[in-house]
Length: 132
Image (tube, rainbow, N blue to C red; front, side, top):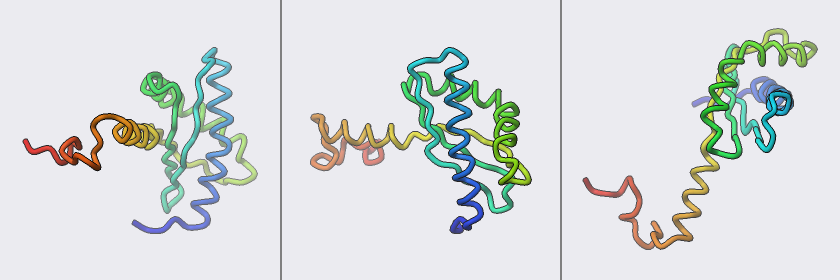
C-alpha cells in the first residue's frame, strides 16, 4: 500500500476535525446524551474522491445502531461538511463510514492478559491457535 501524500493527509485532518463537530452536534441535537462519537481517522483515496471515516462510538452497544443512522444521513453530513470546508476544498469527497474496533480489540487483549486465560502463558486460548 502506498504512503499517503501530504495533500491526502491534509484533507483527511480537515475532514476529521469538522466531522467531529458535525457528528457530535447532530447527536446532541437529536437528544442523544451520554454518547461520545470520535473520528479516529480519515483516509482519503489518491484521487481524493472518497474519504473513509473510522468512528469510535461510546457506549459500544450503541455503535451499530448509530453507524446505520450516520450512514443514512451521509448526504446531509456531506453537505454540512462542504459548507464548512468550502474555502479549503473544491470538491467534497464521498464519505464512507466504518466502526473503528481497534479500541475494542485492545480492550480484549487487556482482559485476556488480566484474566485467567493469559494467551502469553497459554497460547491455546487464542482463537487463531486453536486446532479444530
